[in-house]
Length: 112
Image (cartoon, rainbow, N blue to C red; front, side, top):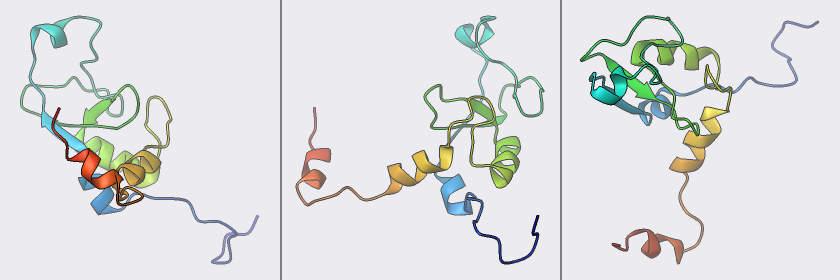
């Protein structure tokens, strides 16, 4: 096993700009969140979410949410959602990429 600068591949990492694109919001305990089926703890630190704490939702299919500080640390080490293991960075990068072709841009500006 070689552990020098000549490694054959680089491990993908999030940039600060990519992490800043993730949706953050304050946690508010509501009737739905108080339901036992709703996730009310951070799966990274295992602490309960408290009202007013800043959470970050990942763009995985389940939109898993974690304490913002916890998920920043987790994404510094891995590009995968800590719960479902989907490659979150590829979703962030593809969402930020400009659309292909001039015809695609006007269609996205149409109002319903």
